[in-house]
Amino acid sequence: GDSVTQMEGPVTLSEEAFLTINCTYTATGYPSLFWYVQYPGEGLQLLLKATKADDKGSNKGFEATYRKETTSFHLEKGSVQVSDSAVYFCALSEFGNEKLTFGTGTRLTIIP
Amino acid sequence: EAGVAQSPRYKIIEKRQSVAFWCNPISGHATLYWYQQILGQGPKLLIQFQNNGVVDDSQLPKDRFSAERLKGVDSTLKIQPAKLEDSAVYLCASSPGGDTQYFGPGTRLTVL
Image 1 (cartoon, rainbow over the protein chains, first blue to last red):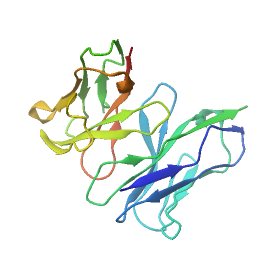
Image 2 (image 1 turned 60 degrees about the vertical axis):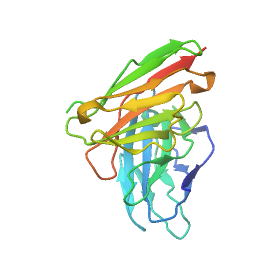
Image 3 (image 1 turned 30 degrees about the vertical axis):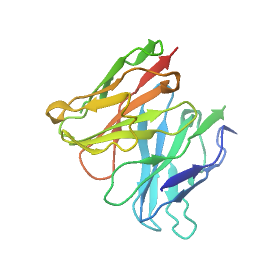
């Protein structure tokens, strides 16, 4: 079945540091890939997505590129802020089936 | 536009008791999902509705969990009787179609 493997956390960085959170997936078809973010006390929010190979999703300074050859969708940001502290989830959905399969989440803490 | 509403936000019960959660999706969204998020894990789909019909309930523990979506709008998820391992956050999400889901704030259930 489908699965998503995320970089183990928690991750602690200083403000303005470069961020990478690794995500790899296993899927039988051609999935869409997502990053969701959960800020403290809030629900899951879609951060970005990509629907086909080599697509780049971007939002709020975050980027992730759909790499079919390495089955990866790593999340990156060039300069993190304290407000980026949250839990980040990588997820996929198969074409024609909207249900999401999530990774275990990575807790990110940014210190000033 | 109002988001996905859930209630209650928190619930504490003893094992073997019953509990029900309510979800009101975004107006016009035909698809509704219930996810279970155990601490330290990613959300796991319990059930998916399309209007008032069940699309996928393959991971719903049907001996104790039930869900309904009356008139294709609001939905209720029930657990009867609850076990300790049911302690989790229960997330409701809705979608107008396609691959983007909108999540509610969740209900945190603690079973003692």
